[in-house]
Length: 139
Image (cartoon, one colour):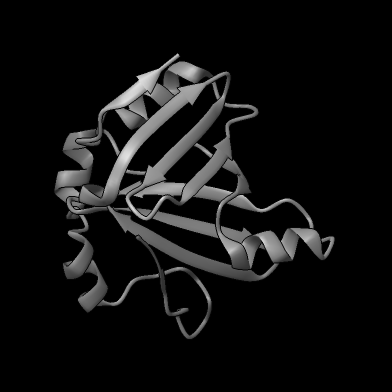
């Protein structure tokens, strides 16, 4: 299941202490040991109705990055001055595939989230994805 977090009062994408605990956000030191918990920039393709409607309305491409948490994957999406924060629990992921710079998450409610990595080297993406507990199919 995909969830949306309430926006921070200044729309920065920051998380409240309650949300950090819910998602299992890594501490600063744990993040350093992992070599970072954030992804290279990616581009959103489809899968989140609210964002699909923004794209269909003719807005610019949405800039995205992921953050690995202990229990979930956090998705921060920027469109102009707006920040949208979504997450899904790692236990809800059925399949993850990475093929030709496209990343597809299949969730247990049959939802597919699609992203692309246009500028990042694919080995940087693989290195990021390997930090998760997800089983990823690299094609």
